[in-house]
Image (cartoon, rainbow, N blue to C red; front, top):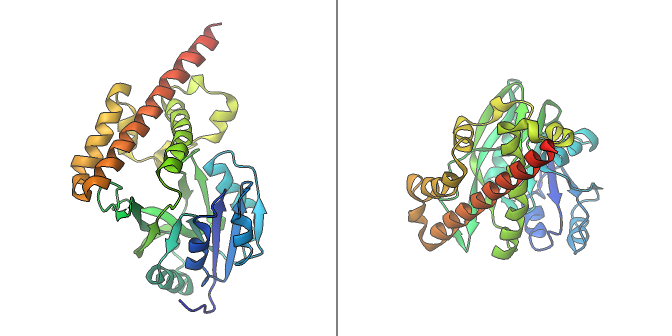
Length: 285
């Protein structure tokens, strides 16, 4: 897409993304402003970034909501409308044109727009098991929105919202090993979030302050799922993704991804159990 005048700022979070970042940046080079918040990359990420923008900021990563909110509070974006893109995501020309059109119209009754993401896994677009029909919020007026949750942050905002027809393409080129390592980290955050809602008395003051302030932003299905006995959660997650959401139609990659998510849920449950044991013991001392 040729670059034309527009009023769109882009925010990308990075941490050792040399494999993905150039493709991501090419997908948003149409935007009037690209801002990158890096968490201490030691590879070629920042060198590649500076080929496209000089608006590079740095902050040590602690959790997703804190990182995004720091960006919203401290980066002087040139425009009110902000597009948040992950380093392993690509904005298609169709989505870019739609975003520009929405921002040009600048509807007074809208604060945010939701879109869908095509998840590429083992070379295949997972239409079912990766929950393609799930909407994610990525375009918004940055002064009117903040995020909560340590991982998979939830947006909290006032005002109306809309939906975009174009898709983001998620294609992480780091491979399966990196995916496993990343989700091991994510599972720790998810365990903390679950304990926060179910056993808030066991959290430290710092953990309590960093998690959700308004549980109404959490989907009812998520709340119901978290209340299941821990031993039930992994198989229920697999059944939901593979059978209920027709993940079996994604072939071998669909089975592998669904089973991987079962393992991910198992990690979360073990860490919840471990946290409860450790913190209950600590309180009793």
